[in-house]
Structure formats: structure tokens, C-alpha cells
Length: 291
Image 1 (tube, helix red, strand yellow):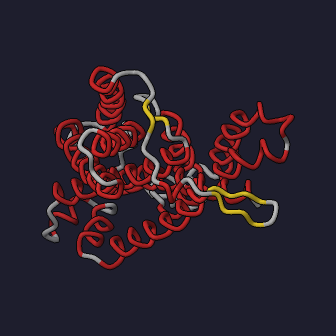
Image 2: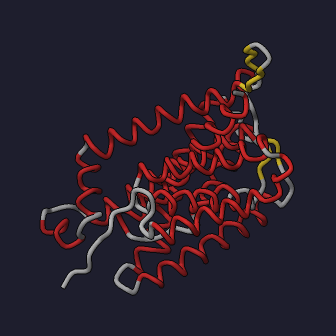
Image 3: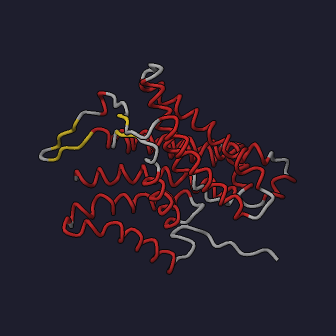
């Protein structure tokens, strides 16, 4: 039970980061490889808001999420918007370059040493159920992640900007003819995806309270695999893929400790198997080419 709760909470973290990938790809058809580093920048923004500026913990989290959303908008305007009319490979290479830029910026500005992320007292408690001891941060991660997913679903399904995003994901030219502001909608998509990265960074940093410039590589790569396994561009697929990776990451070493060294190989084997038998992922939709 203890390992199951930990696996579910980690799966939600991977899933939320993967949803950021899925949102951007679903609308812009771009795999944003800098997404994991936006995740890292969100953790640093919250850290400095709390430690350097003395914000209360919750205020620091909200401030960090807002700044991360603005960072996502800035990245889109600087690194991706000027390349939108060129072949998609140009934007892909730009995203890789932006990833290296953010990592090295963090090393120069924040330093390469690990820093302790502030953890509130309520997150340090341990819940005891018989012989099972569950960290309260795992429970909070599950509860707040569900709320975030419900809020995201409401935005996509019940708001005008969500409708614009769904139309834009189908056809840019049709969206323009319908009077949709394409640039503003794409900027909002990047802001929303970056905010999700910041939210998941909170939960990840509470679980592993050491932040450093390359901390986004591991959850970023896991989230990318989760998004591909679930079906890149599918919100539901990203969450399911995150759950699968969370289960493999936590439950496999717990159930078979003698095979824990094969965990990484099994995760990438899952990716290969899904791509071989379901090239569009578990929930991805096959899109035909236009004549």
C-alpha cells in the first residue's frame, strides 16, 4: 500500500509534466524539449521567492507558477514564433537549443550546487495506517493533482480560449478564418503548459527537496516517454502514460529488488513495444495526410 501510494503520486507528477508536452504538441505540433528545463526554472523561482524575498510558502508557489507561465510565453515568442513558417525541424532544433540555454543560464546565475527546497511542516508529516507509513506529501500530491487536472479539463472544454485551442489543433487556417487570434492562443497554450510544469515541479521538489540546474532532465525525459506512450497530443494519454511510468519506477524495485537495475531498460522497452505495435500511442489518433 505504501509503495502504491508513492507510485500514484509520482505518476501524477510525470503525468502533469507530460500534459504540458501534450498541450503544446496538440496545438502547435512541436515537441518542446525545453519543457523539462522550464520545470527546473519554476522550482528555482519558487525557491528564491521563499528564501530570498521571504514570501510565505503558498505565496511563493503562486508567484513561481505565474513567473514560469510568463517564461513559457517569452520562450514561445523568442524561440518558436519566428520559425513557425519554416519547416518543423527548425523549431525542434530551436527547442533543443533553448533547453541547453536554460540549463547553462541556471548554472551561471543560480550556481551548480544543490539547494534545499523549502518544505512546509504539513508536508513533513507521516500518516500511519497500521504497519504502513505514508508521507503526507504523497497524499497532497494526489489530491492537488486531481484538482489541477479537473481545472485543466474545464478550461479546455468549457471556455472560449479552450475552444480556440481545440480548433487550432485541427487547422491553423480554419482557425484564422473563424476570427481566432492564433498568436494569442498559442501564447496561452505555452503559458498553460509551463504553469503545469511549475505545478509538477512543486510536487517533485517536495518529494525530492534538492534542486539543481539539471533537475529537469529526469522528469522531463520520463514525461516525454509518458506522452509518447500515451499518444503524443492526447491529454488522457499523457496522464495514463505518467501513471504507467510511475508504477514501473516505484513498484518494480519494490516487488523485484533483485531486478531493480533493469528498471531503465524496461521503461525504454515499454516505449519501443508501444511504438512498434501502436505507433500513435495508446490513445493517439491517426491523422491522414491532406491531398
